[in-house]
Image (cartoon, rainbow over all chains, first blue to last red; front, side, top):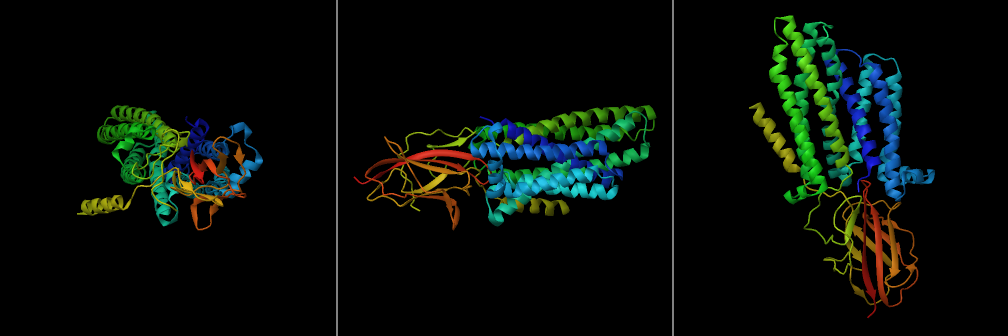
Length: 323
Length: 121
């Protein structure tokens, strides 16, 4: 059974944070300015609302109730007495602050603040995910790795939103061609670095969560395989942009340049659609149980609630060791 | 050369990572799963594969063919946040008992399970 409210809240939260981080960094490093508030404010509002939704979904799951039956006492208990709650109090405060900053007319300082807040919020997402389970210094390492993974993904995928806006202007004949070309080339280089970090930290995450090849044959493994396939598709699209379409922007004929800008704009839109599917898979993965080692104690009599590992049965299996 | 150094750095980072688990699975219990103990336990101790949230985790005890038996509040062991402890207030008469548990792990996932143990012969 999949916890769809939790998957939905995770998806909206992740997507909004990626747009906030990616577009503010794009403004700072690529396009020299401030990301348009007409998408910063909705993204910040979506991040704040989905943070509240995530809290309700976790409270419902923890207390074994329906979403509608979650009451103030349960929310207080989640926020006050669980590791998730300790992180999420900060998450809610930061999400509120991000909305305030996005709504504030700010210039460059606004972009810096939005990027820093979105990076902190992505770290919060990492802290309450599968990376946060180890505790201690190993746990901090897992969380740090996952936070870098999410932030690099945000630089890449979130940056596609302002990139599309830039290409739209270029393909409709507006904007200065040399400046646009320069910006697209700089984003392309930054995205390659971000992709390298995504792949490295993603592989490290995998080492933690998947400790045998047999683990692929689980729901978690199947969703992971779909996600990796989608990422491979994204890489193909990015390579087409970089190797085929980008050189055509250097063309002397203005008609050829505009044609290339239109084609680039279309593949970037397509990349955004695939990115949305990747984030959907990532949101689902966070709620599914990663495969665990079969070597340790008998698990036949234990069951994952909301997952699909084993089933409870008569348990007369002696434990190997005493406490 | 720079590429080689980057590859070595990447390789050592990946080698440093080691597998972990994401749901709380029962690893050890006192009384032991399926065991027979001579006298009534004064508490139930369940050790899981990862840290659990006492606020939302539950342990219930019932006579195998009878009603529920009241336990003390569930808490984590002060020295190990993977261990759930619940006191058994009144001595258990001889018989077979079923322990059912619901564990909420620190990363918010829920697992359930049960086991039996026997008091006396």
